[in-house]
Length: 464
Image 1: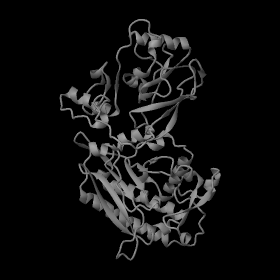
Image 2: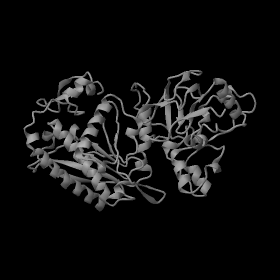
Image 3: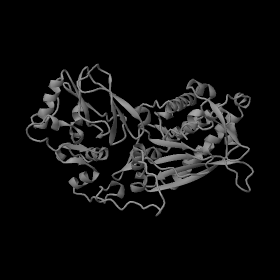
Image 4: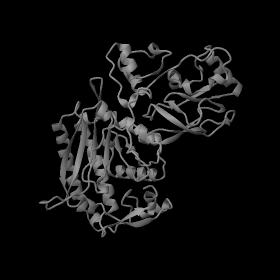
């Protein structure tokens, strides 16, 4: 049985507490080689395949369509199916815990988090029923480590959440918000308008997980926001050049990343009465061109050049259109930027992501009565537990000055001024040549006014 290896949901690069099993790529008893994809799983941000850690025969323990806690076991790979089934029977009867010598340290550590509720060990158990397992939410596990507790203090107690850890410490347990209550305790659902027929669809799992993540803003943080008005010679007009649009987007990332080193409280998060400062500056850049919101992450953005940021962001757009993001591309953000300037949005209310202290929003051009030049808004939402309004204002004003300098340099560049720009999509900013490589095309669309037309690619139109 030492040759049987459990295949777990990796903790690395997965921000969720659980994942959904989309489909199995192998069947029980199939022989696989090391590295062969075994199963396709879905997180709140993307889908990815879990490879086999070794060559052998597969035995699954979770059905497609079920959810499994991160760290939970999906299947086993061993030399023979009989060896795996023998191990499962011994586990179910309490004779053996984990596979030993061939298990990696990470897999052995995740043994306490096995999602036995979704396993089918009962198929092999002929004696005693399986013991009640213990598994931990991501937040509970972090609190256990921060408070110096031991995971063994919670054995055979099912799913352990933050409130269970607080109870173990003898501290007051806050009332669960409505979103965390069970079905029996849940508040009454909202009622629709009487006598009006409705069509019912399930809210997509990704949006439900996103709601849990973003509701943290209102449950734990003390949210505030400041806005800086940035005069511009014409942001929208300048962005008509695809090259200029890419440079301006890269300039925001470039300057934000460097300013976050000067304002470390904006590159941090608050928990348990303490400020946790990130040692890396990883910028999440929100993209939404009709295929759902994705936030790819530019790792160590403060160490990169403008050109490298342009190239990396361009690759993000291609990955978005091809639905080719890897899980690690969407994880580990320490600060987020969301740009709605291309959608004609004057101002909006960005939501702080859990595990961060601030988010920057960028609005589009506007011209108010009495103004002689256009301007756009920079909106910084922040956690007031860590950041004061004056600090946020200083950050925005520093960023404003830097972005205005970039705009002047870009607008005055002969290369940009004389550029005969290749046609591009006004939504995802992909050039015609890039769109054609993806077997797409550009079409003219009518904008907000009858005289306004824009080019939109077929990929964006297909996902409106």
